[in-house]
Structure formats: C-alpha cells, structure tokens
Length: 416
Image 1 (cartoon, helix red, strand yellow):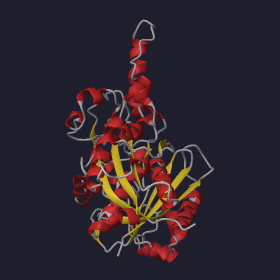
Image 2 (cartoon, rainbow, N blue to C red; image 1 turned 30 degrees about the vertical axis):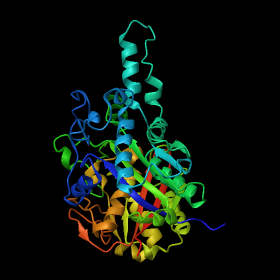
Image 3 (cartoon, one colour; image 1 turned 90 degrees about the horizontal axis):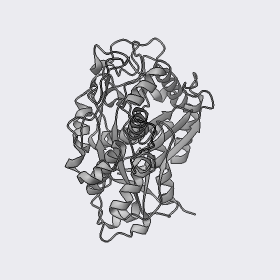
Image 4 (tube, helix red, strand yellow; image 1 turned 180 degrees about the horizontal axis):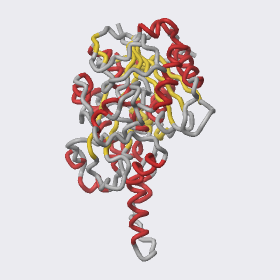
C-alpha cells in the first residue's frame, strides 16, 4: 500500500508570548520572555512565585459567555487556537466531507483547575456532595477535541493522547498516520494545557522540578546554561491542520511544510528523570529519521525539548551528538522554552509551529537567557544563543519528552 503524503495547511497559537500565530512568531524572533509573577492566585507561601501565563486573554472575546463557563481553561485555549488554525487553512467547511475530518488532540493533565476547585469547594462545605454538573465534562482530558468536533461537525477520529509532555507530539504522529493510511483527508491536531494553578505549582514544586529564581522570573528559563535550576511552567495551546497532499493541492491551499515522519520510544528508566546517556532519546530520533526516509545530514534545525533542567538538557544534547555525529555541529539547535516556558502537553505542538515558521521565514529563534557555559555540554554545538540566526531551513526536527519516559519526535520538510 502506498502511503499518502501529509502536509501542514493551517497554524494557530495561543502562548505566553503572543495570542496568535503571528504574535507568537514576533515574540520568538525578538527573544521575548513570557515569564512573570503569577496573577491567578496568591503565591506568598509557594517556593516558585512566577510562571508563563497568557497575557491579555479573555475567553469571552472568542467564545459565548455561557459556553465558556462550561469549559476548563485548557479547553478554552484549544477552541481558540484550533479556530485560528482552521481559519488560517482556508478550509471550506460547507463543502468538505466532514466524515473524513478528525480531531486528535494532546493534553498531559487536562482540567486540573476544575478538579482542584471542585475538591476545594467540597472540603470547605458541610460534607454534602454538591458538585457542579459540569465538573466531569470540564475536567476530562478528552473533552477539548470533543468540543472542537461538536462546534464544526467533524465526524472523523476524535480523541486525546496523554503522554505527559509528549502528548501533542504523539497526537500529531497519530494524525499523520491516519492520513497516510487514507482514512482521513484532514485532521485538526495539537495540544493545550492550563496547569498554572495552586495544585499544578504546588505539585511541581514538591518534585523540585521548577525554577525558584523569583528575583528574576524573565531569566529563569535558561536551557543549556550552567546555572539552570528547573523549568518554568507555561500555558496555552498550539493547533496544526494536517491534510492529505493531493486534497490540499486540489483546493489550492497554502502549504507550510510536509510532515515527513514521526518517531516514538521509551526511556524505560525512571518516572521523572531522563536516562543519563539519552538512550531513549537516541532511539526516538533514529526512529523518526527512519520513518521519514531522511538521513541525519539532511536536518538543518532541531527545536529541542530543552526544558532548562540540570539532567534533561545534558542528556538530550549528548543524544543529538551521538545520532548526528559531526553533522551535529552544523545544525541550529535551540529551545524556545526559554521564552514560552514549558507548556507540558501542548509543548510538542507549540514547538512544531515554531520549527515550521523557522522554515517559513528562514530565521531560527534564539535560546535566550544563556550566560554561563556548562562544561558538560559540547561547546562546538550551535545552540542559537541569545540572538536569532538567519538560515535557509529545509528540514527541521522537533523533540518532546515526558514524565514516564515517553519520547516523541516529528520531522518537517519545506516543499520546493
């Protein structure tokens, strides 16, 4: 069976450095940090008092007030980003076969704030189980793609992938394969997360996973820097329209990139720590290259997982050096988490959008906040430090890894 070709025809982004695809890109190339003191709740007793929240976002600017109240923030974000991507794709929703349009979405946690608030309300009451009737529908991780499909009438495959921070990358790979196998013409994919909450911050602090650089939040996310002390929690959504190539071509769609392939692997090592030698990361990148039919020397740019954690950054760069050999020094490597923070289940989608736009504009966004070289990192690698770099990017890789040892990798190619 001959596999179908799959292309990207629409993008939507809702991020801590920009509330649209174009604003997001402007934030990236200007080296903008999305980190600031938390405004959602009182952080006086929290070890970390900052995060990468969305700025100037009001869901009722996009959603009916009554409908918005029935959604957790992670679903609101999904609705806004997916609407932008659908509009960007210029799909004619009145004529396409909606039985062949799916929604495959990623979320690592789902409706954490809804769960938190309902439990807190119960604990503060008299013991009577007076829960909101929308408690469960707002909380469950699969509700975001459900709401997207209901709004637009998309009747193809519809579900959520949950693999911690690899969730939306896994969603894209599933979407890629459905279209490759001829089962769908179009899939709305991506991911969303809204974990900047009391429970989210408290839980990640308890794990010692977050930076505590409270005196300088905007510089706290510093991937590859010797003084990095943990990741910065972010929130938002990224949406990507994947479409069968001939279907897109027939309607004259703008094509951002071709999705060449995806890879998956497991570290099989530890609940939260990466394998110190990056064995699972080596495997996922090799799987992705093989699935794509590309060679290591074809890759121009890698948007790394690069969370700004002491162990993770070193393991990933070791793996890149092992897989790409001498060519690793020719690759523009970066971490856009230095600007957006870590969007957990939405990270793979947001970073894939950043990688696709790097091809679109011929500019690789920087890894900001780098000041001190880490002796455990090869100094000959081009980590695109502090300033964007112009480059004709033809093939780009996006890496995402999650707690539990979940690894996912996606490769995109610029069409000639």
